[in-house]
Length: 222
Image (cartoon, rainbow, N blue to C red; front, side):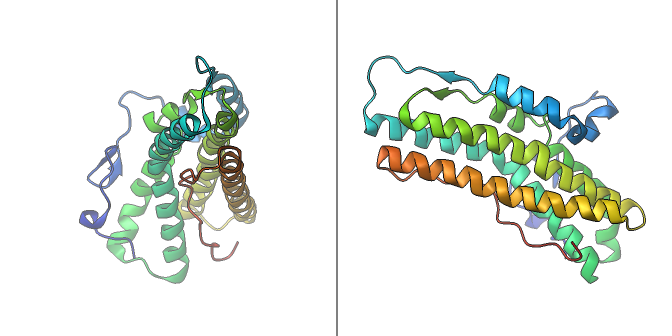
């Protein structure tokens, strides 16, 4: 069952249970995952590596990377919530767990979830522009920024749009196949991001926050 509005966790970009969309945006952005190739280029260009002045100790580097991981996780939180919600809606739809009231809310919820994982979300835009110091630990965290951005704007967004299409019309074998593919990519890129943080841990002799990318359940019928 989809929880009532009052049970949803507070999100600064969430208003009455929905992610706020920028006014005046053209309709084309709603199909953002089609522009994945552009998104990749943006991530590569916008994820800036900067050199720290002077020599940085391992302890200073660990503190800097911890702060950056907290920033990255904050930027990812809206999309992470959105894709979990979309997967829950899909599961409940397949298992008969949606009430009539739930069903009436599904299209708007899915649209909000879609927006939360696109570059029209200020959090995702901020994530793609995180500046990472060119330190030993920073080299790995730079990769977390890139992978985390692609996890949101490619994997999660494509999965949400597949579920939107399946909710709006008859079952499509091609959409189900693509949804299964996106499930695999979400898991793969989550593991990749975790691996980069573990590499930074070994480099710094520290324990950094892990990426806030959810371990999603396997979807019914995929």
